[in-house]
Image 1 (spheres, rainbow, N blue to C red):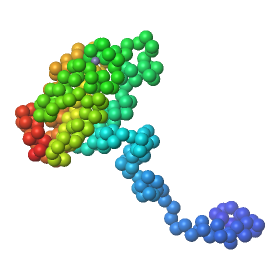
Image 2 (image 1 turned 120 degrees about the vertical axis):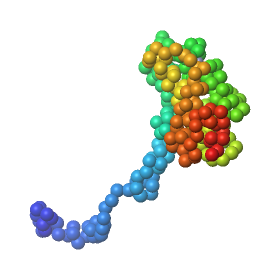
Image 3 (image 1 turned 60 degrees about the vertical axis):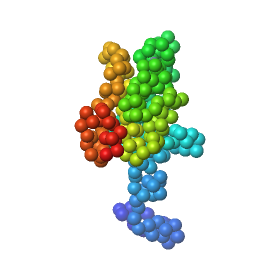
Image 4 (image 1 turned 90 degrees about the vertical axis):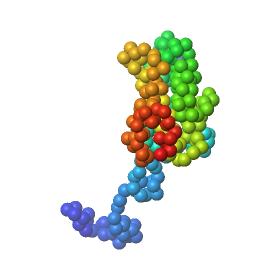
Length: 240
Ligand SMILES: [Zn+2]
């Protein structure tokens, strides 16, 4: 019995009349399949669901957080910003407190918030409870015509934006603006630490308006608007 260039000898002959060999020969084509898609092609969507479920099993996640994780990927937010928001909701952003937990900052190292210099720099403090940042959210909500009540978490605030009554386009636009706020806060915090910048929280609202306007006219399917219109009547622009 010869397979290719190898002579297996006469004693191998019974193997090739066996049922398992016939089964192997009956396989017409062999191909790769992606198990989360039931053997079909690989998709990023199914991989995201798989990874998310590995980090926090879906059944164990509160409904509020489940909605928040869904919301961040919808709308015209740039994907790198949505990715940052995803890390933020998982408390994986390298704030000083998180760096301390990873032992990158030593016990006697500075863990204080760069904006106020008083409280520990946790995600919730840096993006929500720091007094200057709370004012930023107040002013952004006033610009959008929303009534701001200080929520208990950043995901709760995202849900407030993402479930505002109105059309789908409005909700996606508001979610994009939530993303713009956290992105601008994080960039400003980094500019203070790495480029010796000065805390200027009053200017953050204008940065949010400019960033969100660029994202909106760049990727939204809605009619484009001038920055002047965006600044004065954001809700009308979002509903176009
Ligand atoms: Zn602070």
